[in-house]
Image 1 (cartoon, one colour):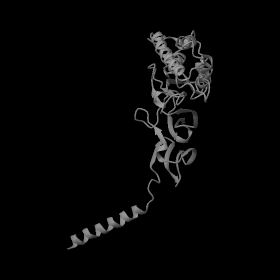
Image 2 (cartoon, one colour):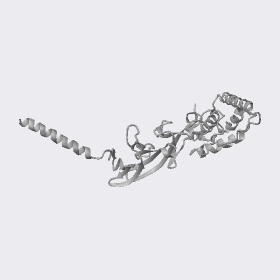
Image 3 (tube, one colour):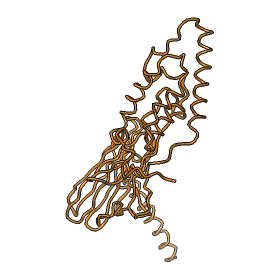
Length: 299
């Protein structure tokens, strides 16, 4: 009988404990880990907001906010929460924030966990895709690799939009395109690409002439829509030439691809340049000296 009473008492205690757990608000502290003097916490700050906070001992020194829990993450490196990605002798922490209202933007916050000098080293922001880490040249230092989607939805559906992969290397306190890792030899099928694009433009021209027996005007409408009759392979190839250190032949490729009776070639070139200039890396790419030491071609 005593054993039975003890067992019933145990059940009652467990029921009471479960009732107490039910009263605790869920997700009040969904993540917490420490590295030496630093602590990272992620929790629901209020009903509309989640927060990541970094503490140095008991003092809060950094915070990020987002409307959903999944919009704030930390990036593990080799299954570690902290890692010296730039090999400067101090551990780094990478926090990731997703901002759908900013064009599906994903921002990496690169933080230094130096013992007595916490700092945000830099931010790397991308659209439509998540950065990743890779050691391209096998020197033990990670590059941050991004997809440059500057031409997303430009005169084509997203799935047809070209992008270029850009490895970023730490330089001067921030991450810049590693041009030496991007350099490649000139594609050997440029003539075939140009002919294919030109044939598509010729087909458009002939069809337009049959439908509207007067001059074909392709310059009306919005810039991001008026070149929809051109295969995206044209600006995809132009971007490839720029982002592999072969910009010197880009204009020649355009001239080879363009059907001569169709107007708008120079206007397209200007529109392409204006859109390309929106890339955060264009100031490096557009002035890339292909004769520099950085421009050694990959095999």
